[in-house]
Image (cartoon, rainbow, N blue to C red; front, top):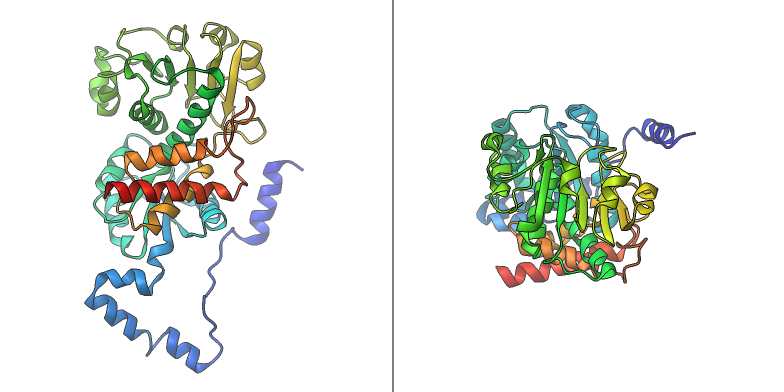
Length: 386
């Protein structure tokens, strides 16, 4: 039986992956009186008098909403809110298992930006954090940006979770090849949510933006490219990247590159393109379910470190290494947002957990210390900033 068939079987058997359990028994009339009416009126009155007491008397301080509208689900694309539910359930299960966070899946049946923003704002009182998931670009940028004033951390994991894990993997890969992030030429394949967030975080960490080349479906991005005026996010990055104004396609961009980061489509990278890179090249081919180039082909062509998004190859770049810990830390220190410094601190903490090897540049997803170490770094970073 295949993995897909096994997954279908268990989902059907259990009717989903989540359930709700009460923290207190409801066996007697006294139990009901304490949990519900009339006793519950007392915490209600306390919260009405002082809204901050919501953290004292309710689940808010340990609860995250995992929210999607199903427009960019995994590698499946725009499959809608209902079809996105299994992914959001899975994410909620990971939050609970790895960080002890009570997360709840919410799937909004709308592609309208204003409606999504309004719904999330209206339901936010009960949650201590919002994890946006599988929203397509460019709408995801606007939605996340306009939710930053809720007073709780809001993060689009496809952007920033990906960026933090990639940064951690790059930090450790550079140790293995003995190169500095400020010196390397980086090529990014893809210009969607994840690719843009990865590029921005690498620059924040110290990558030389002038040596970064981003490629979309039309080729390399450079500041004089006429069609970029219709996409302000690409346009913004075009002003600081690709200073040599290299034109052409991905093949042209990868000549003499030190790092390739793929967040695009399968099969876009050939062996010849890997050969054209500098010695000890780092290749992160993360298209799912099929990478831009298979690890074996990349290795045979001279790549030194190779990572993908898949669990059946070495060096899986998996968001689950970061999102439980960053939200655990943010909830614990009552952070009102996820800052750039917190992202870098989380990535560094993840990278520093292991001594990197060619086939192990990141900790295992099953390592229960990962969310603890990431959370500690996040709390320290927030307490320094606030």
